[in-house]
Image 1 (tube, rainbow, N blue to C red):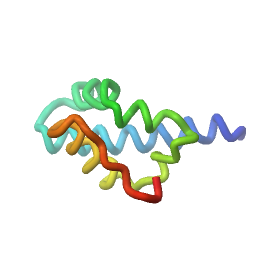
Image 2 (tube, rainbow, N blue to C red; image 1 turned 180 degrees about the vertical axis):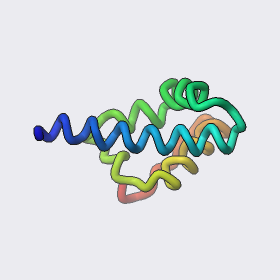
Image 3 (cartoon, helix red, strand yellow; image 1 turned 30 degrees about the horizontal axis):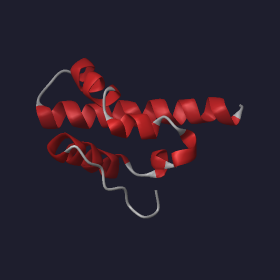
Image 4 (cartoon, rainbow, N blue to C red; image 1 turned 45 degrees about the vertical axis):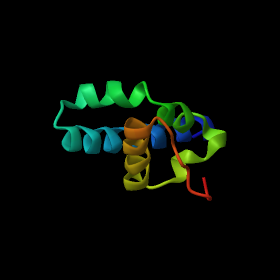
Amino acid sequence: MSEVKEFQVVLQVIISRLAQMIAKDMNIYDKDALSCLYSSKLYEKLEQEETKVWHLSVPTLFSLFVEEQETGNITFPEEA
């Protein structure tokens, strides 16, 4: 499997889990959670493999998503 393909598979798993957490936390449908995620700055960084944001755990990504929703900013951990 090529690296690009591998990244896409990993990204889909992360997005799926992250959307489930968002949906549960915000009490919304999964598809609405996906819409929120896809329109976020976090997703923009997440889909760029070179940012390495996808290396972060799903709970960490979720807290970054919440931070962005509440403040409009994202404070990435040092290792990102």
